[in-house]
Image (cartoon, rainbow, N blue to C red; front, side):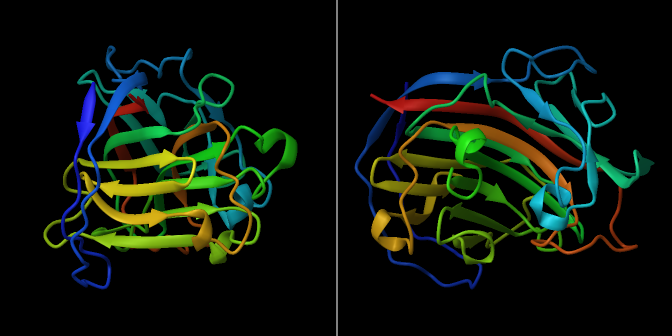
Length: 268
């Protein structure tokens, strides 16, 4: 059982102080989780995760540069209760970089609730870590009609800023409904932070370390609200792409995203 009583003042990328808001207490019951327990070098639990493999059409639709694999060198447990996704600069299957993209598609999805992950993200120009979700209808209606919820995505060249967004018909790609949150002190790549959404039939609330920095409702969108179906979870590091630009000679590799846990709850 988890309870959340939030919110206080918010800091966003523009460093503006936002009005104090208070949400009613919400009580949550755990429905799915992965704590990433296991021996060093083990693959993630195949009853919970599957993989996207390859380069995808048009670099997964974003002009990304990496080839996604399920190799131990790109994804493994570290023996300390963490999942490690590693992006590498290497020549592989015609690409100049490799990484991994895990998803729960076909294994777990849920409509509404709290979705959270505790993550230490990588940094560097052209590095794009993300914790996000797609609607189960993806295979039938494709994107953006299926809906996309980006719980966390970051530009590696801005290691103190994170972004929360939704994409759907009429508000996708560069026109997504989005907001940024900036740390007053520190960087997201030097410590673990908790990224979460709390989602119901008429709102999606975005949190960093249990601070609410954005609420999205149907009236905020320029198109159809498609967030009324189960969504599945995705974790990945992309290299390059429209959102972050290309890595430079100053971008260090390998890059690692370390995930402490992923947990999903329903409201009690």
